[in-house]
Image 1 (cartoon, one colour):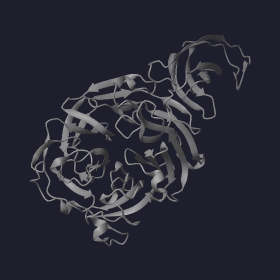
Image 2: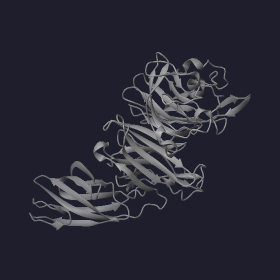
Image 3: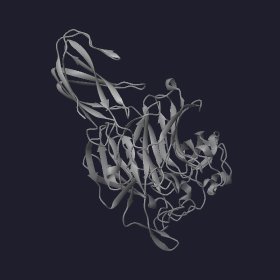
Image 4: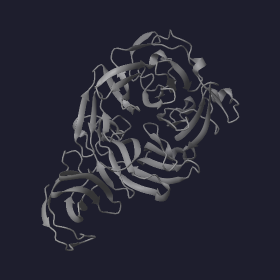
Length: 513
């Protein structure tokens, strides 16, 4: 789609709906519009503006939730991105040109197509905008695709309207997790490829890593811009019941983003009991199922969410510091179980006065309001105060399948005393309606002192949804809640991989270039 406009303005008023042009000196300019310039971001456009005088440009997509951004380029030839177009609509986009001695405004119209039919219906259940952190709602979402996933991260506004999405169907497999790095780059990975895009869908960089490593579940940007990545490594085995079994999802690599090389690796099997199988209900080689990472800047240590084991902390120099997990059936470390005794590294659950709970609580046999371990957890998060947040999914809680609830939970860790205290939780009170046995996320929103919680796979006999909830940290009251009603249009709607839609994570995101 292209549109060209040539105007010469001489201190006159141009009347169009919702705007007017200010008086100023003469200015000749042209605007050429290209919708979806890189073919994978249908609700974006690129404006090529030529003007006879150097200009700064402000773009505003008009609507109930307008999207506005200023580009201070002071140039006569400008490429200006437009984000946040409404789907299936003739969009009005206000363009303001600021130049020496004057300003003028113009409105261009950009027609967009419908979003895909398999996108979810989004309902806004609660919205207290004056109490919320700013920004829209970014979703790391993956759609059923006949046994595979089609990854199409999207951003929706306060009315539940999709305003941006990226179609990663070209990859032919799941590409995740969707995140925006500190420099504004969008970064996601498939099993062996790291993708970097801009918000228009322009591929900035594509890096194929060593094929001996397979990336999965989480990529964490470090303060220096390098990446910690969960991986499986070919050719690694564990000893289980006297048999040698190929393992997966039990290495971390450090990836130098500038040089595009792997510079360090950590083998989690050297720190843990690979034969501990009480929570591994997939296959023997998936003994850990690492799905999340956090980085503690205070001591440069790494916190790992091992879905089938617990929360683990190792140093940058690769030594074990502590484990938060039920104290049941832990033996020796190592791929053959011939390493050190792990039990001394298991933190003891205590109350606010430092008193230990009963043996049944310590072993995870009993859950109480004052303390519960995280079961099948995701998305560890280091808080500014040093505490640890995590999404406690809750499958096989107490080693059974009776209590069905998920929650965001905060733990206070005393490494010197070897203790862990539960200091905050949300979600347990909502019971089964908030129970997501897989995926999901938790974030801290400093601007509003709130916790953003994603319960990403809520499936019953009659419904399949996900929820995003922003909860005031102090009052524990909801200030925002949205429900995504999945369709699983291109799957058999079972829980099998790639057959049902999932919301892996969500973020509060500013829709900007």
